[in-house]
Image (cartoon, rainbow, N blue to C red; front, side, top):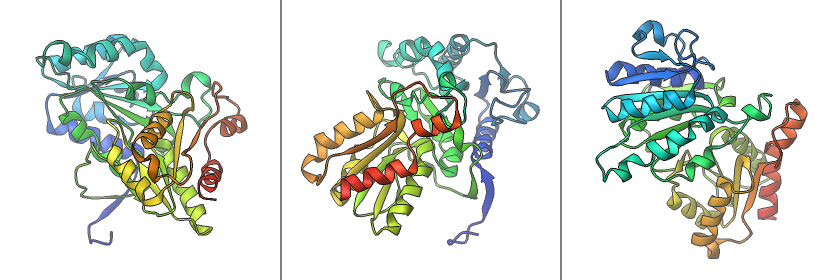
Length: 331
């Protein structure tokens, strides 16, 4: 039981996502799930396990191995008044549907003069750290955050995994949800009742006064661990979880930097042209005179992601890297 007296249930990120899907399918007949292996197999990462048996093959649809085809079908269904949820196994496969996402889903409302909204949700797994090699370890959500006409979400907590889907489905525009593969097995207590997630605002996961640590998705646990380590040294770090990557919550970032006067941006993507670069630029544009030190960035090494575990760990941002960057900003 939580401090406010509400009951909490032990669950995992994977199960929280499944419950969000179950709720969506059960509450709106227009909602259906489609993608490779989402039905009989239960999803490549087990998120949709059991939903085929519960809702049937009309609502949980296995598709051929053609991302362009089934994302296009999802766009068509959305245009026809349905509320499709399209699952793409991993973000690298979404590149095969980039034309559909960029040239159709993101542009049809604009090109039709407001006549053709595309209320489509696309879910995909992102990120490295699981020894899946260079082709299946990308963090490309920053690419999609570059595209006008879509909303980009990165749920990093059990609460966001459980409660981001409903407002995403209610959004009249296409919404992309990036689920970091390292989070699926994360377990914890999930309150029985949670207020709807505000998709327009970042979340302060830990308050602080000495340095702002800004991150999202699978890097959040590492950043929170870094904040714990810094606290043991007497450094108070505020942790900002962006959670919505497009549109970015500029006000949350600038307000935090105004409190701490230092910023570290942690992004698992490559440093060059990254979302971390965009956040850093916005801090420089909007909070330059608040800064007492240059903005630090902690990103992945500029290499294709190695397969060997130790090399992969060396290429990815780690807690120690965040701590070191915070020290450079504070010391």
